[in-house]
Length: 403
Ligand code: PMP
Image 1 (cartoon, rainbow, N blue to C red):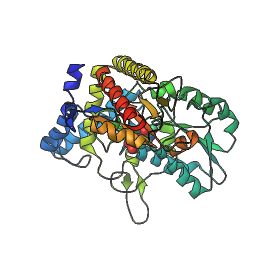
Image 2 (image 1 turned 45 degrees about the vertical axis):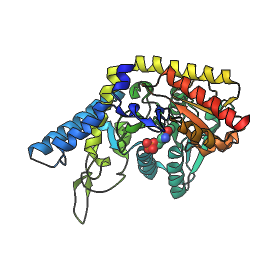
Image 3 (image 1 turned 90 degrees about the vertical axis):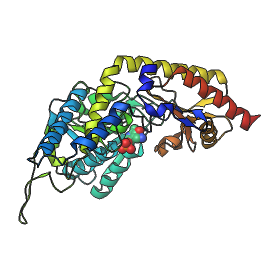
Image 4 (image 1 turned 135 degrees about the vertical axis):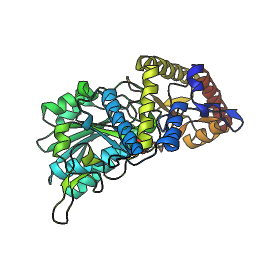
């Protein structure tokens, strides 16, 4: 653990005179030195625009960018590298699908199904295309534990259902959704499925062929890579039928004022100069994850989740929001009589970073009839000792407001 922590320079920082305890990993993870070095190296030694250059730098950058695509393909076990589209992150990946798939396949009165557990990024893009196409959004309900009520899904499906979009893991509650079951039900009805994997990819391996999902989206910055780079995986036969999302350089085959023809996959969906430096650093982040190994990540993070939950239970004044049987990555909670914002502010004074608020999942908060929660979320570098510090902090908050 000491070796792993040493790879992350920011973990040595002091916040308000205390060693940083970083429990806001669901918002973004910290970056290992290797990822930072990759960025510095790219801009110090390799920076060049790709694909169109004959000179050495351009060719070298193009090679590394396309090698990264292959790396991501292997990482997700996609069948073809052209099924991997570089985006700015999960939000852009979902917007791309909602806009392009919606443009092609959605007609008036058609239906899209999402769940009541979604991040705004997996709600609003669908609302936008529904508005444009006069289609309807249907929502799979959740129960009091914060779990999708899967039995309700078949009742929502109709001949008009064109796509189902759900999160792999809820960022607000940590619930792991039964996405394999959802995909099976959807496919029995010939409906494609998009998975928002923003919260899953750093916690366990994702095999898109095994899942048989049609689209899978994630953000680099939540898996130790920089901000501004993300991935859309899409099945080739679907992506080929979809129109371009944005127009510009790189996504074309030929341009004339009379008629423009589009480039083949994946370039059809990558208009303009791509984020090469961050893509290369994403490759380094994947290597970092592989060097630790998902088996070790799952073992360690499960221990952290179990330990934190049981230590919080012992306090007696914590109300858990989201008590699903299968959870990963995050614990959402409230202290009786204390606004989550105050909890966050007091903990920050002790150097402990948690997130408070609605976590971009207002419908989830409305379901539980609360304005927000406090959320502690974990990564590979967190320790039980840090959880002990959090528990001491929570005791202090409780004393301050409730004694
Ligand atoms: N979906 C989920 C489940 C998320 O947690 C997040 C980020 N909080 C997003 C989508 C959006 O990710 P990004 O802001 O990186 O595009």
